[in-house]
Image 1 (cartoon, each protein chain N blue to C red):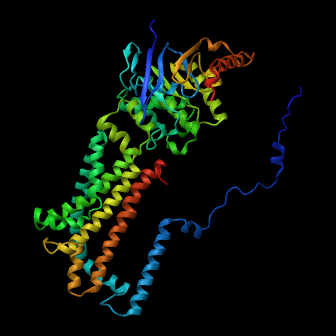
Image 2 (image 1 turned 180 degrees about the vertical axis):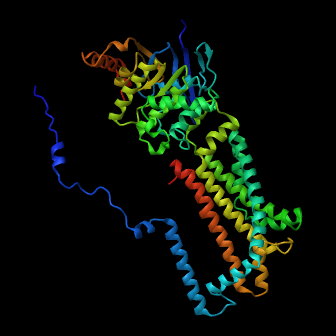
Image 3 (image 1 turned 90 degrees about the vertical axis):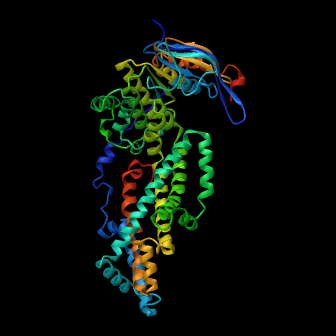
Length: 254
Length: 287
């Protein structure tokens, strides 16, 4: 079976006002259906830029990206983005309105069917209580849950998550991570997850791609991450191994 | 290696006979004072009292009639239908100019955000024309469009177009990059993108533009009528003020001015406040 998402030899460059910066250089990886694929690396490794490229927001200057065999040419609702920023929710729409918005805008479902679907996913993230609330009345963790419900309600080929829990407090972050895994157990969606936290990568992912910075290159891929567990200390050992690998060269330490 | 111990404190809380005061109801006076409408009404009553006192003290109705003389004049002129008729004549022209100005501003800003040269064009022309008082164009407008409402509408468009376009544009520019990416994620582009994302996201700034535009238009219209109102057959509030000054009916002049103020207050406090409450305040994008 061909991979769901196939990224091969992708070089990403973007212009600042004074220079052209190479974010990633000839990066390749492939994501299979129902993978929880994590892009992990220190800041400057181009992991967020890579995710935005998969989202279709920027074109690679080299290499190719395919989703379901189709070339990625621009943003599309088959790849739903979930951002770190809390302002990704539309402040003028209620929780229900936010979750229904992409379903209606892409004409995926008529209003009559979009509403029950949206309510079902809001229920899944445990926010039925605030279904008619406006985003500004919600806490950070609730906002991120709404964003996740909105992404999942579209039932996209792949969810693209750009450090979605990085702006949350430690306790809420852990709850959100647990809930994400719970949701995955229920629906087995495919997710491409960006983080700079090794612990989060191990907790969330079943495969981890390690990137080294300046410019971003693939350093290693960790597979079968599912097999480690916190109880026997294997997760802690893996965390240490990854840490040593990422920060092996002193030049990379900031 | 020792072990930490957890001491539960529930009992300590339960044993407190009287819980501390968590919530206290506010008194009637305090509740009233918290209402902005009540506070502002008090200010207006205070100003009216000062006016009345000064007018009585001066005792010269030709220079400065008292508040109650003005109210009587206003009542009479309203009862015989002069003020409503004149106000309606003014508002009719105002709506035409305001609507046309907003429509042009919308076209201009939508063109401006889609291209860089469009943005440059908008920024340049607003910088050029925004400081130009609309009334200064009236002599020219009279040559182009003749005596009558055409000229008034032209200067009104000029007074509405630039502030609305400027504010709408800065509202669009202020929309966060995340929201833009969210909109594009759903395949929104072009006109639907503007309607579905940019306008609601930048609505606070757009509303400010509409308010400024309205105030400019209202001012410009009354001033234009004062100067050239003679020409238009019916004549609006500005012409009413001018006419009564010529007749030395100063309380009626004051009544005309008061009507201008009242209409301004109603539009600001009823119409725009209601829009604000139901949009930007409800969304939490503006307090």
